[in-house]
Length: 346
Image (cartoon, rainbow, N blue to C red; front, side, top):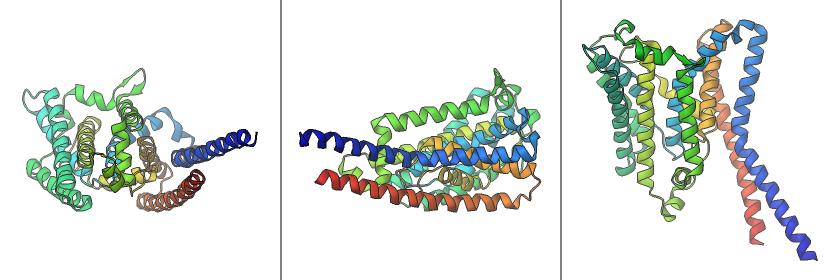
């Protein structure tokens, strides 16, 4: 009888610990969502026009490209790597795509495919250098950042692509909507859902987390580490290429160094969104929320007529706070897992 009562009790305790662990893992996304709601509510109370239909649409439009880049960056960061070249890729692709579609008889479809191919090629180079050559990701992507910037300036030769030269069909992609929902947020959400489902539901998707959690354990378990890291960089490059095409569609007028400095914004969005910079933890949903939060902060400061300098200061403070909270949550999870291991051992 004692055995019968002990077993359910043990199972109940294990269930409570699993629930607590799940709560800790979800705390990142929930905290970002809570901060976002409070920020919007306070700003709307000060300036009711902040929540006008146009104001909300602008926030989502501005956050869409950053969210798309953050989703690609998440793939890389969860494997304990980083991609600092995404901003340069966006600038290069936006200009090259604009140059192609503004040419006499230029095909919009071929131009978009060329933009995606450029992004994928940049990701492939990064992935090969990191996964096959073993060069640290920070060094590789910092180097390719400057190489791609230089290539963009070489291609541009000081020129500018004007919105008047871009086909209206492409511009409609950046400003149009279906049933009142703008295309850009819709694209970002669809990509987020697809990537999030893959990382959560497929064994190959879980392998990215295994690499970030413990590369040595993943290797012993037979995870193809080099192939997965290479895939992560290619995905990041492809989404950066897509971001470049959408940048052109959104703004119309582009120069070679558009999105200059965005690599830090993307990394900030990912880390603030709960993706651990040391790898193995985080979701694309959190990264997208992080992108939305950073974009909303920028809009709030404009509405409240605060000096733009404070935007960078707040982003830096959020980054430090996110890393600190992430460390505390990691320690909490470690204690939970140790208790579970100790219980199973006895």
